[in-house]
Image (tube, rainbow, N blue to C red; front, side):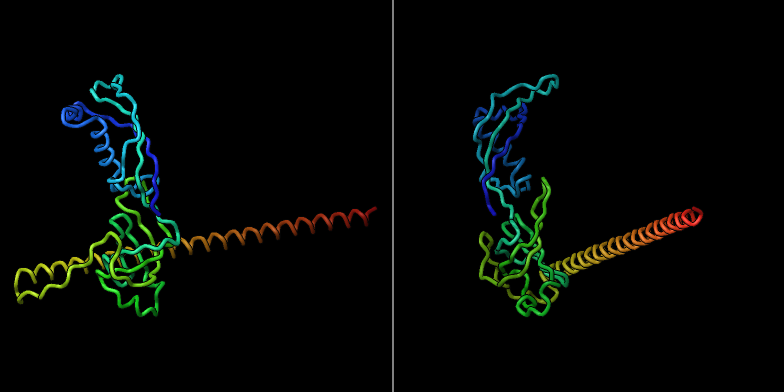
Length: 255
């Protein structure tokens, strides 16, 4: 799931950036720029770990022609570690959210995994899971686009574990504050916000299901229409063949 890849980037350093040369090397400035540009987001290879990036080589700096910006351009080759989960990969993450539709799992702030409830009907262990629990999930499908803040995956619950790799254990529950205290009011507001978010997610899921049903109905209608047209064409061809046979028979009788 984690692999090392090469990047080829065209870096533009402004005169303001070059003023830092007195305290930093050019390579260090370029590395900072790469970490800002590529790190903690998705590239075409997967989610990039900014701390793993390092400069392998760079060209001599060249002034941009005809733009009059004063920027110096470097062609840079760098390497870094990326996360790109394949189907069937097992990962351990913490439950970030839970609603009536699914679980929302986070892995190293790089992969967000949806675990649908419909795929675990009758599973008592799945029903007992709560926010903050650490579980093992098998990834079934993933998708991302360049510059996305995380990879979105769909997975299947495997088992509950003690603590996720790279994820801090949830903090123990603190005694409830006195009734009517500001802390309790904040907790109630947070619960209300979570409930609203859950409702929005359910509405989005329902809309997606309705769109899928509409698409399926349209496809079925198109298939039925195509079948009717095919039948009509067959009937027309049969009629033409019958007419030709009739004409031939008539011609034979005349002869």
